[in-house]
Image (cartoon, rainbow, N blue to C red; front, side, top):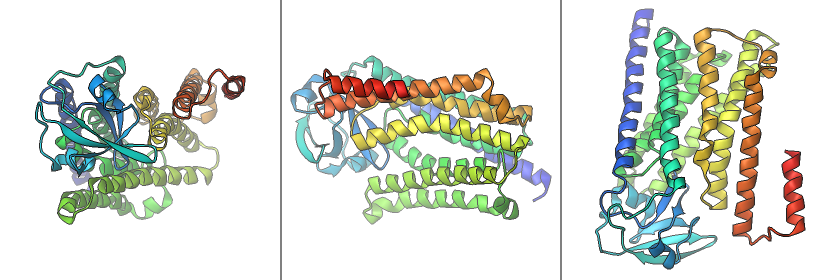
Length: 391
């Protein structure tokens, strides 16, 4: 492909990426603005694709029926909850009770609850933050990606960065209220996010030798993403549960993240101390500080079965695009020694320690509530303070 054709292809795909992110923004905004229109499910929940639907808010009627924050939504009217939410069940009707199956620990229980009337659910501060913060972080990601592309339109790094930022911002835009539309859009976006992450980390800041020799290997994750999207389309006709489809996409996306970051780390280990190796250190550090806190909260939510304020950790995500954007636009391959001694590094470490304390406090709260730990016990106080001081 000649340089002019390559540039046209990048512009076309960049335009598609921008359109995709704006579509996610429009859908996410529309659902947030009309989240109280029409009959509503009698509780709030958060979605961990392919893993569980965790109850995060319980109105008085559901609380009287025994539903509690942290329960897992399993079925609605005898149908798998994922299948029902994708569109496999009839719509809610005002005044008509639905039968819900919930999981709690190793057991489960049923409850019949009528949907809430439009605007029947009052949003508390936590609910508002869960709606607004992902939207703001997604908008910042999208803005940084577009700005870098406009400043360096002929750069392969800026192109890969825009594709990644567009997919991640779309994922954040669609993380609010769920509908059949957002469910299907997420099924398309999740594998694309993994493919664009692989594309970015094998392009910037280092291009691995095995990619240099075989550039077309970057196409494989995109082909895999298209195959998963096709599978999601035919899965209802094959009798495959949506939770299995979501689980496959989750494994695909996280696997590509791990492979691409692992490849970058191995390439860095083989290098001597140079400007390129210093930039690789900065990118790896930024990725670790940005993604590990959020992933830790999501995994903790999945395995503890409790609703945790994961959205409060989305601010960590902003360190990564800022570091990458600065490197691409300024074209400065700076040494990690300078970064370690700068105020930026101290700020990143301070944020990481703050996140660790927040995670520690949240975990302690889960232990107290879930396992009936006596918080007034001197052993609990001494252990907690020891771990906190050590951190």
